[in-house]
View (cartoon, each protein chain N blue to C red):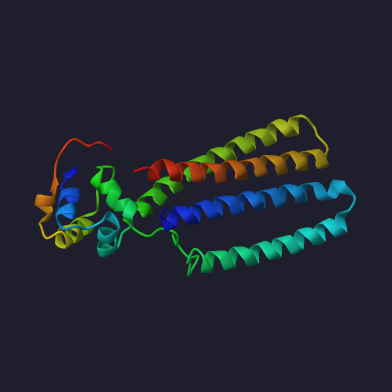
Length: 144
Length: 67
């Protein structure tokens, strides 16, 4: 497995964990145990970031996070550009659909809380879909 | 674009990984070029030709694209 693929797989799974943590944070206000849960989330978050940086530097040999740091040669750079181009299009479509959904939700005259919750969930869904799409597209273009 | 990389590489008893190291690309890229899945840049084509002891026009020929 190439270095780029190992980094891709690692970031895909760490993003998934991050999304799960975010999902957990969404439910804190409803849980009634805000303080201990938030403290646990904060400890988990800082611990997770520390582990991520250690693993990236020690195991994946990432020296910098600038530019396209995960690609090693011209073919991988070409794959990254194709994936980013597709992701940009998807991102624009997502924002357009989100704006449309906001109009629909406003017409339903939801409470501020319900409105916020719905938007929060839709954005979370978009992030999760984007993470999956990035991984899937890279694997598709990398097939050789 | 068709190429003679696999043939030349085997003649020189080089593995894909060794050729990749000599041309500063990944093994997957050499594999993709050999299988006509990726057309290398001019700079990489010259590097491959130099390492395999041949010229670019001997190494690459215009053929049916399989991509």
